[in-house]
Structure formats: C-alpha cells, structure tokens
Image (cartoon, rainbow, N blue to C red):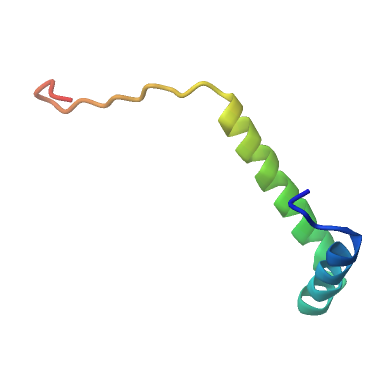
Length: 59
C-alpha cells in the first residue's frame, strides 16, 4: 500500500489523533470512507450525455 509499513501508519494515526482529537476521528473516517465510495461509484457509472441547447437550437 504505497510503500507504507506498519510503523509509518502508526505514526500517521498518532499525528491524526493529536491534530483532530479522539472525538473527531470516527466522523472523519466515516466521511472519508463515504467520499471514496462515491468516487468509486462515479467512476464505475457510464458517463451521461447532458447536451443542453439554447433557444436557437445551437449546441
């Protein structure tokens, strides 16, 4: 996972705990997970063609 080992992940977690505090970490993790899930869902869906035209019929 990006060349990060267990010691590096522990250091990152400790820094996040100090910066955000123990009460904010669960909500931060939840919002990050939802954002990643939404990004993956957006990539998996086929793009929609939303071509809008003005009153003269030009694109």
